[in-house]
Image 1 (cartoon, rainbow, N blue to C red):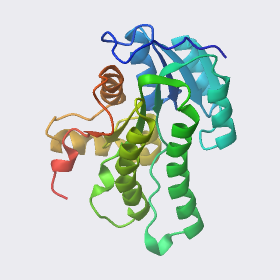
Image 2: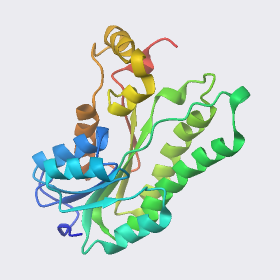
Image 3: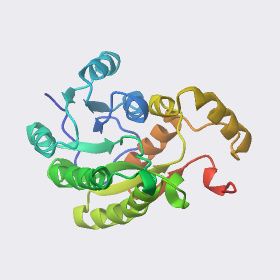
Image 4: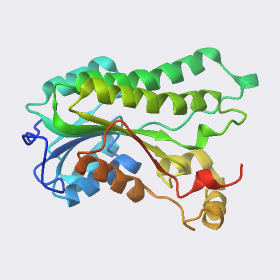
Length: 253
């Protein structure tokens, strides 16, 4: 795998020209759209995904400088991925799998423990494994959510993660400085993952949001990707959580 080397110094010209972004989860959804916008802004991408076929399709479209097919929760493969990079990179974007809803009455404790620890360990793993490869002033951008900030049946595990990730990201921003660390907290985003989760209820959910959200439309992957690129480009941003939900949190419960 090859990768373009990162720039030098903490201050850079606007945009991502001559910069390299590793997009973990870059073969579909928000990750793929982020990779598209990085390329449109003049940057290079390294695509990581679990599904080799999806990864190949994304690579055919975007012509990345490198690809790697593995599960980011595999710590050994994650560590090897960063070790194998031939030079420094500028940013890492990490998307996440969908939420796991577990009502207490139906909860499998082992599954709940696995889901919670897997997500936190993945975030810590990326921070640990990338710290010697991301240049000073670059950023790690993680994905979280806003929907579980309100208590609801079945949301215990997701709510705990929603509360934990901003605190974790803030601490990582101090420990990894001058590498920057930020979190994007999204509401409903109209992605293939959302379609898979909702099935034949997808269009009804879209219509509901179009009518209720203050922005009067559904948030899409391009909206989230634009925020991710902004965070990468603005080197004054670190340790923060950036909400993007079209005003969903403002609605009555």
